Length: 406
Image (cartoon, rainbow, N blue to C red; front, side):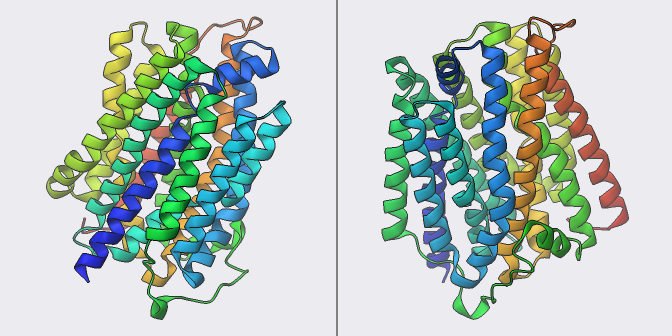
């Protein structure tokens, strides 16, 4: 049994690495591609980038709880495979898009089927015990970071051969991932623990009602929502911010994202295990939020690249908060409802993606535009720091109200 669980974890890691790498290929070249396609400046491209994220998130908000509930009845494997196939189609649309409308079609398809990380998290919960749950989530989060090393570096390099090239490679990589999963990914949810699909619970509002049955999770999830909105500042404006303020090119942006991924792996594989033993999940979550907030604040106001890199290190270490909160929420939910939990969280995170990219890119666009009375390219990160502070306050109140062992 232990051998089967280890094999399942390995398969999850491989799928997450390849899927994230395919996604990360796109980031370094997206600003330039949108600029060329729209015949616009970087501020306008950032605004359209926010609307593309909105289209993806809207579909995630609606379909994530459906896919999560389906995985509780039919298993994780078919849902995960549909997600991987959907992303490959999305990349094809983006690779050959003749106009901006095609981008929105592709992002819509990807949003409908995009449940790879949620299902992978449900798989981790399926095979984990109280003793190794946080460690296993840390390993999968490290795999996520590894994908962001491979993807942006390749994307930044391929971007020199044309802005469409990374999307073609991402489509191929995603289809390889689908093929790998089809032949080698094992089912992690036992038939005896599955439950019947229920439309009343398989919708965004039904999932919210479901989460409300767990008082502690209510506050934890609310805290996750605020910090998730804050974290979207990185993927939404990092490339635009570094181009605008420090004149970085696509290669340098790709390398910076790779550094984020590399350091995230070290944090998740090594530091999480140390901190969870010394501090427990609760204190590790609080420490992580403090560091995350500090990183955002430094991003917002730094005028020096060396300090920007130092802030990046602080921010990455702060990522331990996500693993801690993820472990706490998963430990409270029954085994046959893990898919529903992850689908509900996916829906809520989709909701944050509806809000966050538009908030971050619009604020960046306004404060860097020609008509702005105040020039402040770091505005998005200042907003992120304030949102993280709210998340921290909510978490402190939650832990005081609900006494926890960890």
